[in-house]
Length: 192
Image (cartoon, rainbow, N blue to C red; front, side, top):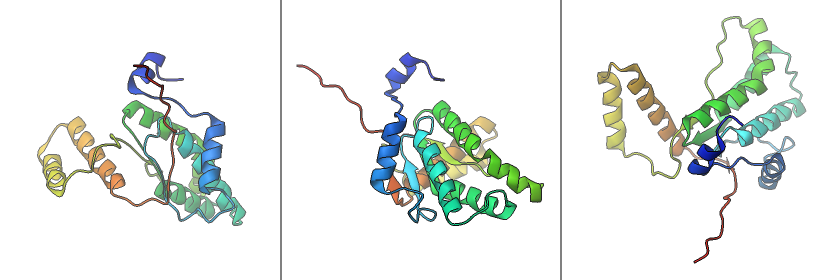
């Protein structure tokens, strides 16, 4: 809804219907009744975060099925940390990543409120959603070291932010995941 149709088409962005998200997460076994709280999930083309949001809902329900009272600040904190540490998203479009983070935030705001009742200075960590091209191979160690040096040398805050984001995205690319889910490819048949 937030991206113009022509822009979505140009970028090859197609947003997944809820029924498809439910089907895929069920098919891979990412369900509240399963032991998913210690599993890592990645959507390598997360768009506005539809898979991430549903995974978050399921993870919250998983904690509830384990007996967590999510109004309890300590249990809410553990649930929040579980979401932040185990749900990851990448997308080539930085604006889509921003929307994904906002969508995730809407789904954890009650947990955040419960935590703040006891821990007044608590600050919500950032979600692990980064803008990068998931199809590009990871950077070499030499490239990463050059980027680290650029962070130290640059005085441009935007450049520094971009380099730090790239390094964090590279960390996600090198991580092992228990679940990799996403929008199935929607392609058209070309006629010759």
